[in-house]
Length: 157
Image (cartoon, rainbow, N blue to C red):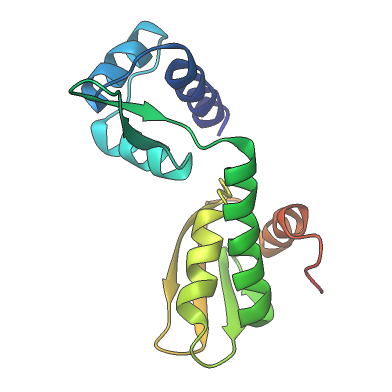
């Protein structure tokens, strides 16, 4: 986990301080910083950080991070989607089951995926009213709930 957090911090710093035009260029910068990652891992990192490509005003594009207000607004949207859609949360081992109102499983799963919780491997949205969350080895349902409550203080037990 620590390496991922350090890598995400390095990616943010590089995008803010360097003119990054491609993933290949960013991979090169990361390698100079001591991070060896695959293109697939970098793509997931960029998605998690909500990095976009914007025109540089000449003939190219550069990577850019959302500003804090935009990031907070997007995060708040996911939180509201989660709160509107979930009914209950329970777990067994490293599998969490979130019961949702009918038709809300996709938006609840998307919210969990986009809250950036390192303990979550991924989600599977059921057909209508269930979301399964796979947690990393050694992470419990209690750990998941603690992290969710840090992200969503309004979350009820």
